[in-house]
Image (cartoon, rainbow, N blue to C red; front, side, top):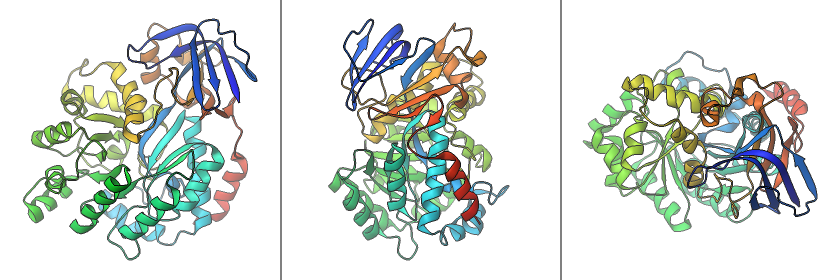
Length: 421
């Protein structure tokens, strides 16, 4: 299908970070065919976007989307108690149909937040998560997490990755380990070997709490990222979620190896982990910094606008420095850096890129996006899901005029409330 988006303001996120007003975008099949003024080529569908802003869809670089089903459970508990007393026992009882509808619920929330791709790890129902992504039309980079529990070893992760590799244009398998404290050293090494062999990403929670640091030091005599590096697990295909409680040496290691760091500020604050991810140092030294919401049970939201804004504000607050990083950097973290982390040809609006585009209404019911002195600033600090009107993923319209077209949101909500605990 061909789509022509007419007369919009385009936040390109290209190499020069151009913002083009009164611009057209031509989409053929699943890719962007042209970006410029007065494109005259015919298209099967023309979208008048005169009073809208077009930009690349957000990439949620760390989440557990099916946990929308357990939103609000285990409130006011620290991380380890939250996991061990509430979350893991509950997840052990989950049925595939619950995972399926929990995923669809989370996807609805992400689409309304302008998310077109996400990186996920989960312990149960991975095939159902994949099916939900295909049905909804969203890109999901998924992994069946390896964890030191019966039935959750590397063999199962291998089976999932083989089943889904090259099966879907939207679902991409990756390999993940839950954490260094929930996996044996053998599990960690074998998982990364599998990821390297299959040319997949390796995704892990790391350095999320102070306790994790001291436990790792006591056991290995190394800090967590140094420990991973000593096992040859840190490289450009490694995604380190949280990575907040770190030393300067660890930051240098992650940057030297060109690893991806995913900042999850809201989850860290809510679970009172105490550490503020040193985004500035990671970014300045050359690591690939991204932004994630984390799961909708530890956040409790999948709202990327919130996570982008708080990522910036926490850096300013932590360093007592209003110009700690340019505002543009935080939009980069949520778009082009996320695309690099996931290994997908998107993250900017340019010819040849995959057509993953969102439209935001900048006029009707959009007082928060005006005046438009600085559009990037407006997007980082003022925009909200209420501004997102249209979502195009892989060249297909998934949400139009704030209506999700691929799945029935009302029925999903109804089902979730029937099957929840």
